[in-house]
Amino acid sequence: MEKSAYPAFLGLDITPASYDEARIHIIPVEMEKSVSYGSGTAAGPRAILEASLQLEAFDGSAVPGQAGMHTHKPLPCRSAAVEHDLDAIAAEVAGVLNKKGLPVILGGEHTVTLGALRPFAAGNKRVGVVQFDAHADLRESYGGNRFSHACVMRRVHEMGLPFVQIGVRSLCQEEDRFRRGHNIVCLDAEQIYRGGIPAAPLPDDFPEQIYITFDVDCFDAALMPATGTPEPGGLNWYQAMDLLGAVCRGRQLCGFDVVELAPIPALHGPDYTAAKLVYRLIGLAVSAEKQPGKQ
Image 1 (tube, rainbow, N blue to C red):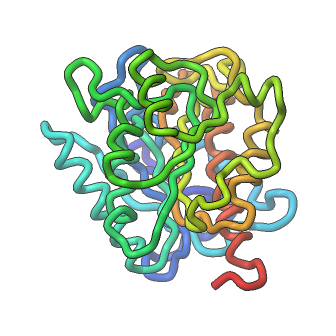
Image 2 (cartoon, rainbow, N blue to C red):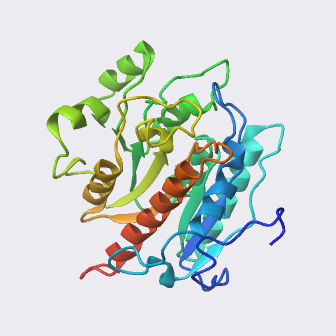
């Protein structure tokens, strides 16, 4: 395989499906425009796809990839205006939704979420967003940029989409005031450490259709050092898996992104962890569709 070519997700074990036949659509987005500490998120999508070749197709209970996976060509996000890149992401996701597919976005910096969510915000169904993150990302602007990765959830709030924050352990006073003033539902990392994982982490009236945005810095820095701003005190693997299972229970995962992986050369563990996280989320989406009463 040429270095310039992107492999298909889990492509060594599962034959890729065509665009029209696939249920699961892997969309690599090479966005790196506003990183404020460590860099390298543009290389995240390729690292996840290459690491996925080492995954087991059997996840312990099923083979989620048999639902049909298609890996899209990467979106390079080289426009001088971030709005143009967000439009391109939105168009790619909208096309998948029109085919009744599951959009799986591989970042790239967290700003990619804003493009991915636009078709959901414009749709007829009520969709809630579940954010896994070390940071609140609720600043009005950062460095004069309203589309910084530090402002993503502030823009999501302006879209009118309800959201819940899980794993946060770093935020500024402005963000703290915003969370309190707007009654943002949150389950912060320290709460999880001290009180464990609640059986129902989402409010009872939260939408049945959910979109998960998972910034890999939600993981503890010991597990995930390959990210721009690693924070101590984060989730371990099984805490994250239990939380993902809890938020998806009784709900339909209609799309997700995994963002902010900044690969470290010769350190394969974080890339593999991110790829396994992606496959776990695919499994949760596919298994929910097979539950009685699900369409």
